[in-house]
Length: 336
Image (cartoon, rainbow, N blue to C red; front, side):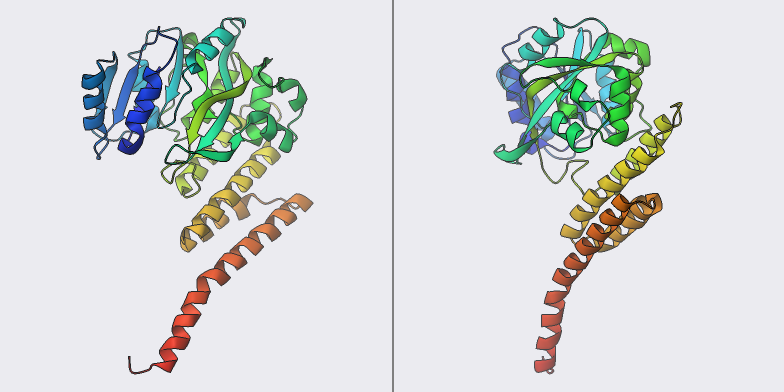
């Protein structure tokens, strides 16, 4: 298994402890620090020394990005399965549950994923979760009923079904996935030209293997302001559009409508985060670049646009209120 670290000193020891607490013992652990500038490296070294835990520690002198960090770890990995954890947490039986499930599945299944429970920056539970079952249903993905197992059970999802669904949304919680190592022998390592390396990997893997959905929480997914998809990243949207467009070109029937809707809806979410953060210029650029350019003359687009207009107007009104109060106060006190 791989654990990645980049300026996550606040969380790294808790993550490492959740690895050490696993009941499944036949684990090869590779820790990669991707050029952290905080105290992450110091904390990792101290934890390894204090616990005596067996792990290979790879240090990047400079930040090279998640895909490069994963590829560095891949060159060191020798096990049958690979799973990744960053600043999240696992229940003690996480690895055992996943391996036990994998060993009941045929070799044609190369990737297993599940649900994710949400925690905040302090590790406390947040209401809601990341549920592929709910996402597939909300998006009305064709044939989604056949992709969803009963709660607690698993179901094989064909590669073709995965690809169709991914154009609608990247519905797989990345920290919940586990991959057979021989999948990398077939499709190669992570593409370092894409910032969203997991979505690109799912598309490529789905072309050669089937997936399995184990419908139970497999990770406590930590939400904090530094998440790549937290809602303040313009580069996230551009990378999303690039991955979808590249893989969409390889389809016999190009899923252009699904891709446009996918990017538009993510642009709405990112715009909302930017407005809440007061990043108004970046929000307007996001709307123009990733929303307006992908509009279609449909009723759904009209509803989306009205919703976006109301959001911008409400946020603008809230932002202007303190400015107006300050202006009135300055008129009353002209000499100050």
